[in-house]
Length: 321
Image (cartoon, rainbow, N blue to C red; front, side):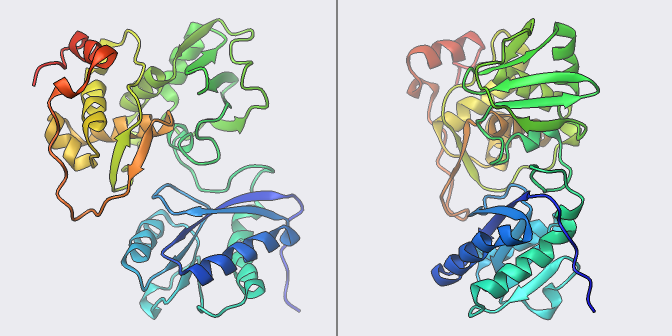
């Protein structure tokens, strides 16, 4: 008799899909809706290069294969369509285009069970990443989050654009260690309680940028693609972040990749990488849907920025072309 692993708690999983046909995508979503029977609560989203619990991809499409290669390097479980024998490895299962939803649900369950069996209740299973990078995941992005480590509590409140800590010492310690994997993140039930009983606060963007630069050597490579900044970041009175402002200026002018930013801003790749992770964690960065083979648009002169943005740029010496 085969042994069935029992999952005694409802665990959540983040499932990303890449290059699936409309029919297969629909059956995968039906399959995901069947997973609560296995004590797994899952949600589906389009693959965007960020870490997920499990990837479902069609390798007959170039985009699906790119997603597969990234997920393979990260050691993520995958359900693959149109895979070759050479693509198979541990943590990978295959399916046919015509597989019915219940069969797909069983395959998803089998891939997830080892991951979720040891997971804490109500947490996203996705491997170990720096806390700053986890803050950029869909589970936490733009939401009120409480972060804890070694008895310290940090309250992250994107709606207020602030982070709060009981003392200034706690805030500095959190800033210097938030690019490590040691922090535990959890969603807060009250987005307005950040300032309660907390004696120190900092601009969210300034905190994340300083943390990213402090721990730049511990951050993974940012997902390939072109990105654009939604608005100018609030760096407060932190002139040491002038490189981050150069990146912000470029991303406000035109969509850019990490390589583009390194050339335009004359910056080290690690610093560009740190900026992108910080802006993503602050929920300011949008992926730009444009073919990677297209020629990136040339940056516009700083005169394209007007009003307050231009004044801020000039204040930090960014008004010169």
